Image (cartoon, rainbow, N blue to C red; front, side, top):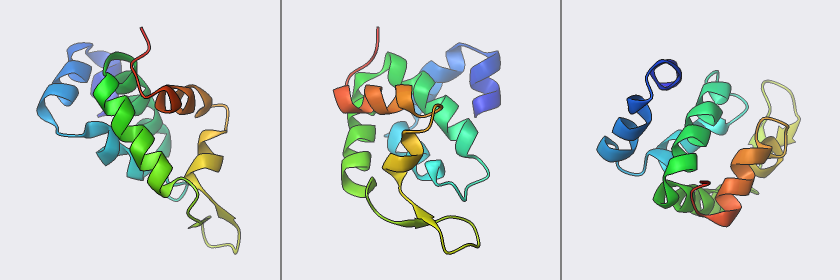
Length: 104
């Protein structure tokens, strides 16, 4: 999906219009064990910039699951969705989710 959103501007609108709660569906890929973490982050930023509803859904997802412990790879280390979103890549997305509205 990230490939199409990078290449075609209308791909963002199609994702918003055609996929119910696209923000919540993509949020699960923010898990650091997901090989699609960077792509999910990119797609979520694009979607949340233009769609307040999906920003709100992402906020609800983060509020519900943001502090849950997530194993980090095969080590005994853990992280959380909120910790992952505090990385330089996730800061803007976290700000959008906290506001629960589209950034114009």
